[in-house]
Length: 294
Image (tube, rainbow, N blue to C red; front, side, top):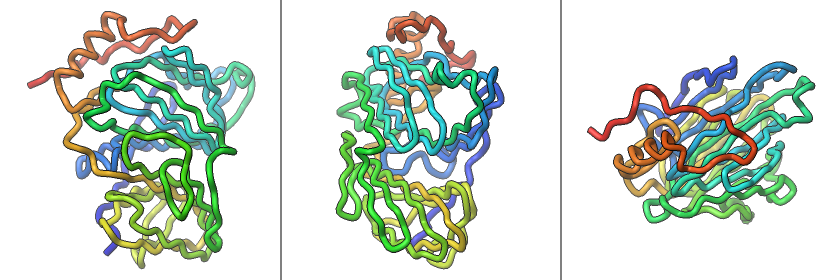
């Protein structure tokens, strides 16, 4: 059968009443392709006075991938990048040997009521690229290729699929699709990568006669075509790529193939030697419960 594993995730409060559904990492599975962190946030209504801002914090050894369905987020980082993130765009931030960034409400929306809804992913960097120079790349929505397959619209956010290639640069084979499946349509998903999974954003589907509820991450069996149908229009996200080249240690915002590197990053952040977001003196302190190498 095409369905190899089903993950329902768990709710997590990030503070200020801002809750997310976290699908990866999971006890049964650390990653799908390079993706070892998957948060679905919203839809959440942001009203004047709400504080869902994420203050400056560090990362190493990964790339963050932010994609919005609705709303807006203001990204700033220690490289000096300042980018309003809007629906349909792909925002890829390579942490590499270390970067600091913040994610806040755009100033012009602070007096407004609006909805934020999207997906936040982390992609582990291959071992040979874990210590690359940090970078930030914004790909606007209009630059993302899309196509129609019967009653299904597919946007190729990252990687290559159905004859379309995304301009987003990656460090290994990576697949990320936004699929809008029409009611009654059949979407045939080929094995686009070594590892592949699909996530039901807002409604249930049937994968080769197996019902899958909304907000579920389905890891697909390697090498198999998955036939997906739905009784009503539904949105799916497809993620995957080459399998990770070994286990990754994850603690707080740090990812590495080496425990010692996470300890060093913790010391660097505590000493405030990882950089600063220009004009933003706030920060998120290390968790009280520290990482240990034993």
